[in-house]
Length: 378
Ligand SMILES: *Cc1c(COP(=O)(O)O)cnc(C)c1O
Image 1 (cartoon, rainbow, N blue to C red):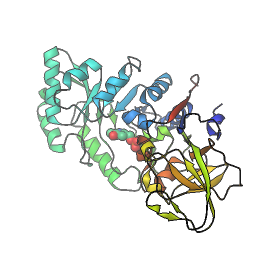
Image 2 (image 1 turned 120 degrees about the vertical axis):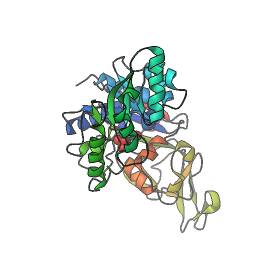
Image 3 (image 1 turned 90 degrees about the vertical axis):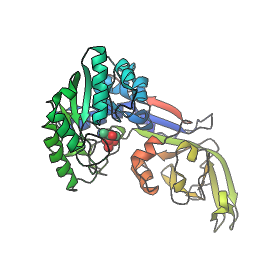
Image 4 (image 1 turned 180 degrees about the vertical axis):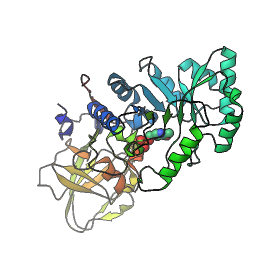
């Protein structure tokens, strides 16, 4: 049913690359993560437009599969997404409440993650103004020093619970700094710090685990917050994790040429051919989020053959050496594979000296996007 996602096809008419997103695989991956922590509710992190894959489409597919807790980073993302979700779905805003955002958060029906005492105070004041209790998550800083109430702020809140009058604490959460290194002792230290801090706050469901943390025994608590794993990448690099690939990225051949030995290729003429070489110019570049760093080190694939990128990656194109293919195998308009069965997102990230999160979230706006529907709930 999804097999056609993997076909290298020959029909780009617009010259754009094609991004295929398998929503069935997203749902399958959400269920696979859920199976790691059977006692916990499995949420979904759909910030940054669901890591570049389309937050509305992804969130709708997951909501239809039963997901009820969604996480975005910014209130504007919650505004965009709220009406795409069923009313009973909760939409948490991880970066918290910037001053002045209190009313919009309430009117949006978003649940802010309160990260500091000033945020608690402003949100409690909004509750008093409206004479109603407002739902919020409290985040504690268990050691990452990024977001959340410090231990001293937790002390202050614990000493004066009236500071939370009007605030209904629906989740207490924290975030792991080193979960992609399962053996790192910081994980256990953060877990212990999280539990100790949460014990001092009003009783509420707890959430600690991201994708990587969802694999750690005892880290599930009541709610998990996977992101990357839903999109088909196991953060710890485990290949036996049972996740399905979600993304296929292809781009068209826009020109073919044969050049003599000693010919410079691309900006700066940084590559010079050492022999007669057949080249293909591919219609994807750094403006599409394809890393410029892959010039001279990355590759694309066609028909199971690796085609190395030669010279620099341009804004709208890159050039590959196609000499390894039989003559005539490629024609203008043929689609080559950038992400797919021969080259995973992790492979691309490794070659570009970055992380799969960055490759995904930078996927450009110019692609022709194709969604494979999740189909009826299993
Ligand atoms: C982004 C984020 C996540 C998801 O992390 P993944 O590693 O992509 O699973 C979970 N929790 C918080 C607080 C985040 O910021």
